[in-house]
Amino acid sequence: MFTGIIEEIGTIATMTSIGENQVALSVKCRSIQDDMKLGDSVAVNGICLTVVKFDSANVTFEISSETIRHSTFANQKTGARVNLERALKLNDRLGGHIVQGHVDCVSKVKAIRELGGFFEIDFELPAEIKKYVVQKGSITIDGISLTIAGLADSWFRVAVIPHTYEQTVLKDRSIGDTVHLETDVIARYIERMLFEDSKDSSKAPITKEFLKKHGF
Image 1: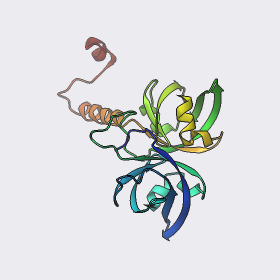
Image 2: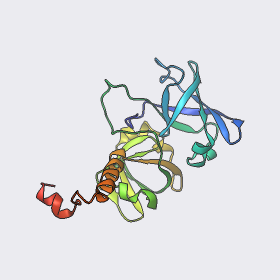
Image 3: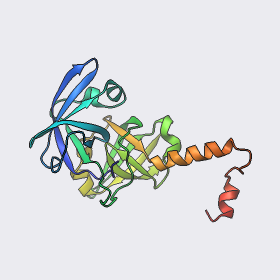
């Protein structure tokens, strides 16, 4: 479990084939090795990966063929920068939102606008996650916890403060680049509960009238 608050930007040192469509990814980094153990989880551009080897200069992960198929790692190259976040400790502050590190899909950058040091960035909105994306809701982009600032049928917008832009790989992104998206897991649980309730004839469906009556 993660929060979407990036701790460090690492650099891909090597990507080595270790089997059919499987890769060992080595990332140069400086600080996430503090109190690290083999088997720890680290979000790399938002994808939860397991540490299989590390020293003071590099951390190595193994990426499965399934992850490669559903991520941008198939096109990543040596020297590319990646967002890094270690798993959340139970006594940590939850600075962003609850992030699983299970990426839903990839998207493309549609537009980037600088507004006095701040940035507005538009991304394609894939059809499979539309129902989970709401105005002012949370979304994770390459592991970064961000808030939906604009929403249309085929795109969504995030507003990015200068600190986040400078301290993450958003600074490296250009129009047409691909990114990882993870929607808010709470929305998925709500959907599941509503779906199960809709099949139970003993429970009244949740409608707009029901929500208004109960103060929503």
